Image 1 (spheres, rainbow, N blue to C red):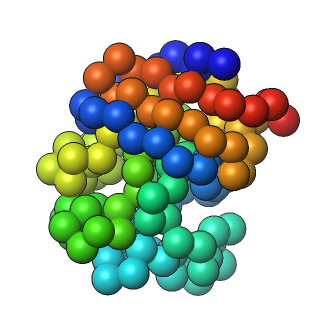
Image 2: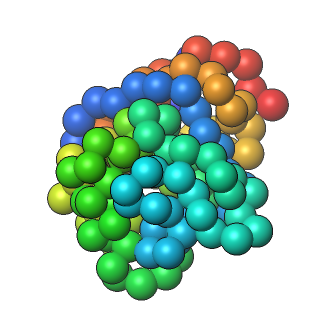
Amino acid sequence: MLIRGRGISKGRGEGPLLVSPAPLSFLSGVDPSSGIIVEKGHPLEGACIEGKVLAFPYGKGSTVGSYVLYALSRNGHAPAAIVNAEAESIIATGAIIGNIPMIDHTDVSLDRLRNGVHVVVDGTAGEMEYDGELV
């Protein structure tokens, strides 16, 4: 299935989906040395984002979160791609400087996507190939 959206950060990334119903802060929410979500009480607390296509509604927190995404990329622990319902400047900037493909405004709601489904995100075209059933 081809899901269309808006391209934010160019490039292609693929991997299993890791879907969060909650916003995510990269500053103090994700450990840049491991790629593990450490935000207490977050639905994905303890999950590793490395190599996953990370889908979440939007980012929250300080502008330093952009640099955490960049550090994740430099440390080899970045997500393969990011899909947001609504991109905001912190996550978009981090994806761009970290060379992480990113899309938002998908024509399928993120809460219909299943964890673990293999996807390919094309940030240049603003599309995601989804190889599974929707919820």
